[in-house]
Length: 375
Image (tube, rainbow, N blue to C red; front, side, top):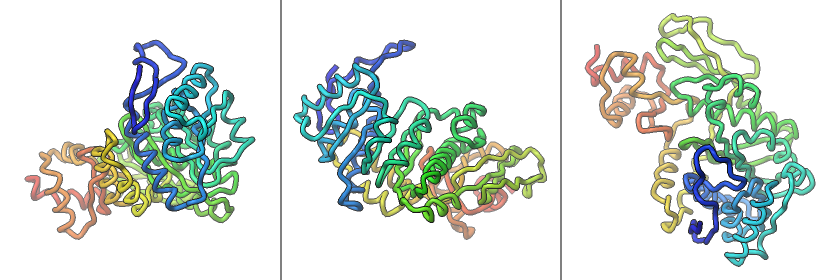
């Protein structure tokens, strides 16, 4: 079928029948992801003007590569599927972009080991980790990564998460952020093996995927600095208290300092540092044109991320209130109570009831209980 996305015309596979695996896949629900990719590439080009080459590592129908080429990048599209390669070439020709892009029919790991690129974009089906080493070994400036295996990342598929990401994930009430920080930990450790440090410029968890954009610094000292952002998280299953500690060696809590409970979950190593650069996120937001179909949703996401605190986990207001046996009030009023008590507080991009604060769980209850009708 024919679609128009981001100002380019594309021929894409018809909508998939459930349970039928197609050799070429187009996901219309990922349009926000692709729109944000183009806005991010525009912002990054201002930061690093010499960046010119872009690898669309799993090109499928070629939509991401075609859009990057239309935006002025020297694009290489790669795929192992014959039908995907043919469709990507047709879509480039349809938009008169043959001169700005080439299509490779080959294993992208081999291609990345043979050629260097300024920007590498990994958007596989499932985990990106089989492609991470080659990307960090050969990319000069920016690695963009999508992970769609959110169940292993978030701890719902526990053993799979350990195998794929070399870390212990835990399925908590902030499971989406657990997925973000497990992914960043695995990517940071992969890059460090090549003496490459990573700085997350922009990361978000949306719907069924996690997306991150990592600026690279090819120095051993930068790799060491990135590893210092790793640590472990202890989480009380009874009162929802959580405590983070940096370091590659876990020193978990034996009992909860808030309620005394001993049902403690430990996750890690996870990324405990910031997962976005506020200034860069603002620059990305400014580069979303009104013509993008997802412009409103993209700007709202970025505005929330820009204001979001750098605390390592978010709280869910409704789950806290349920745990306390109290009714939830309006989120703005809830956050205002925290601020009036002297704490920082912000919404978090993970959902309408998600928020971040530097207050502990006991302090949150004490600051908000009067408004909630509690003692």
